Length: 377
Ligand SMILES: *Cc1c(COP(=O)(O)O)cnc(C)c1O
Image (tube, rainbow, N blue to C red; front, side):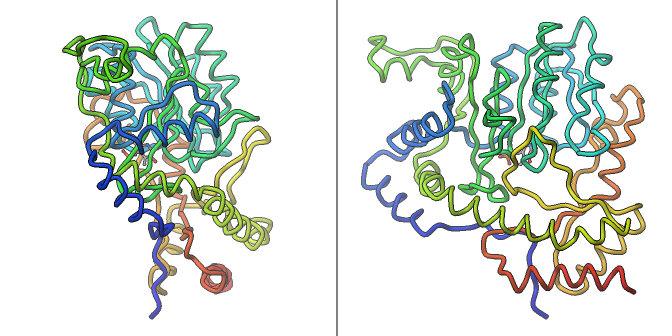
């Protein structure tokens, strides 16, 4: 049986050439030529004021938690329907996570529920642009400003997605991207922190370079460098940046392909939505997405499990997504007990269909036919 994987990391073909150049440059530790090229690429393309490559999005989120000085007892509001890393970075600093529910029409945070979760201990709101679809940022930023809170965007899935005309990751005080091999643009493991608020700019370079002012030293701003703050080794090797740079240069063709595949699923499955068999992704007017995930929502858990089994038994590796973090083994006992029905609903009823650069049109038609056959049984 011909198996169709859920994801296959895409190679542009220039990655090894770039890595070779990095090696010949004689500098393969971090913060070299390719890292600078990647930073510049993002600044030029999206107008980000400052960005720093990291070894993962998890790392970028950890940097964010350090940058905003999270201390034990601080509270952070974030959705429960997300990946572990969104919460982990803040929990490591001793924060208490106050989980919000997702919207009913979209897995993003329910922006209207944020205000009543705010207490005098709340420090930040972390939003997750699920499937590269923007959360309602105007409402979120307005609510946060009113209560003097920091906004951090977990834009791990959201490279090249927009809220109105603003690129995601570039709206909150800080934004974090991922270049993990499951994301649209990848280098195996990689990430980036975007610093949109000037007040975090200087310190971000120091945390990034193990608590030293080495970056300022390299620019000739200080005549020696030393230990000036906390930090870690957040910066990636030039080998990773060289690989990533090749991918960034090809973003147009990668995005084009994914959006065509996404659109094909959407058009082909509309009929099943009209008949009430499933729900398709809802894209709010303010969101321009990047084709990161194509999901469908079934009517109940049993239906989801049956369809997953049906597809997997026929070689189509479709998958569900997150177990809500408020019900996780690690955080369950620390959660305040609120029921978050939409987070649970997405966890029980949502499945993701294969979507990757090399997925060909015949394979995609095969997947669509299978879904129709399932509902005709
Ligand atoms: C992938 C992902 C992460 C983690 O990214 P890494 O680069 O693997 O650390 C965090 N948050 C979300 C929402 C993600 O999808």
